[in-house]
Length: 170
Image 1 (spheres, rainbow, N blue to C red):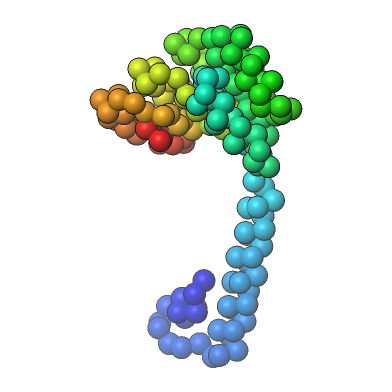
Image 2 (cartoon, rainbow, N blue to C red; image 1 turned 120 degrees about the vertical axis):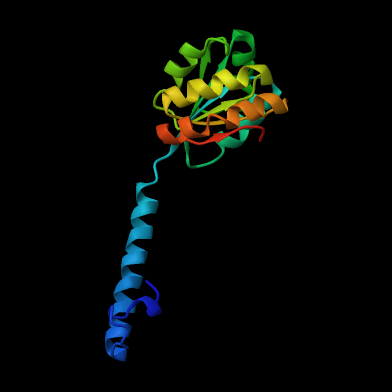
């Protein structure tokens, strides 16, 4: 609360002692709420599609963030996954061999994750955004084609209804 909001509805001024007491209580409440928010912030779980250069770079940054609990790195290539896991050298990294065009499997694998990151070719992103909405996870992609990005943006109402955010073309 701001001091100006600490007035009775009739608009009359409150005694200074009441204003100070209310301000102190409001400050305590805000401090307590902020502490509660911070203590309730759960470590995040990510799923990254693509274990090539972009997927590895994304995973590299995420595994070094203390708020990241896990990164599920998914790719159709077992060799790429093994190489990426060796490169990343983190216990936070899990791997899954899956084709990014299998959106049903992607949606199933994304369940329980916080964010799905697409580091695969742009032409897969629209269907992957739909899979993320179905799994109720936030979605980020690297873009690459304006027409597809515009189609993804049209999914905004569906994403909002699912309680997730879409960030195409980042």
